[in-house]
Image (cartoon, rainbow, N blue to C red; front, side, top):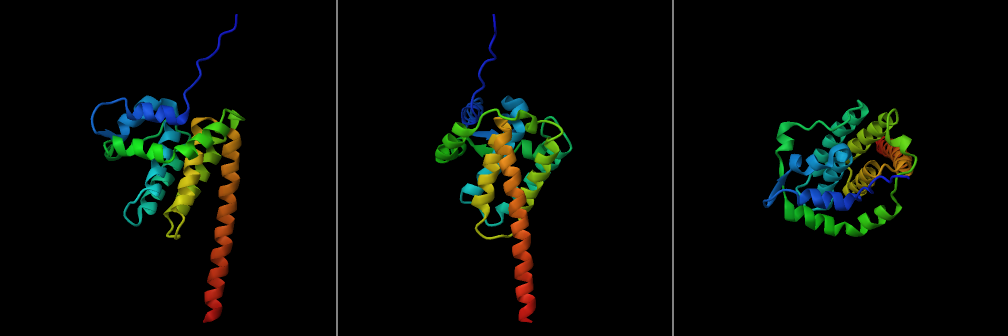
Length: 202
């Protein structure tokens, strides 16, 4: 007789359940990530994407970018679970605000959940986590740079990256790797052309 592994909940359902797991109007980052266990890297990346879609003070992309770089370095080093500084663990967020955000991005989530599934899972494990970590660092650097109107773009990439990690979707992960490298090349080419243009003016 064959036994079947219990089907794992999808990303949105897991995050919503984690948000409702503790009482009170506010929830700490530690409380939110605790029940997510081995999927915490993907969920933490999703949390870092949130401020890019809500009205926040100017320069938040720089702050989030630095945090994404730090998380990417942890993946690059091969850590099994994210190490979070104490001050960040104790950081609280509005439970209602988090649930509202999940509702707001539900159309994106539904689309991602339809296409995301465990595929080429070897790409989500060592030694390929080195590549994921490096790509995460690149996205964090791009997000931190003062490039106008890019928060939504890089925030969207972080959401897709988070889903790829949580759902262990190697196909989506590979697409993100290729897209990020292409964006870095295009950004470097554009910056070089812009620098040459201004240099020629003088």
